[in-house]
Image (tube, rainbow, N blue to C red; front, side, top):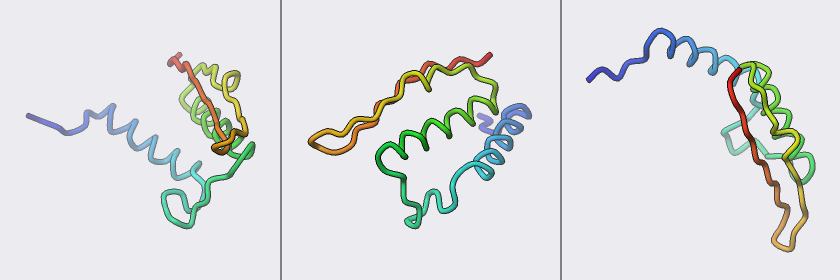
Length: 86
């Protein structure tokens, strides 16, 4: 069984890798990275998803359905998305 990527899959893989290198914050994936808290976290998530949606030309309703709420157990961010390729 051949598990290698097709040419199209490899192109997408490289495109995604480049986008991640250009768009993830410094230190992402390391102990040095500190995720924003509170409403800044919601904006961080919105910005990242909007950037990805623009890059791959998605239509996204995510921005209309993200919310932040302070609760007794701590901050809660709720994100629901419906993303379809154009």
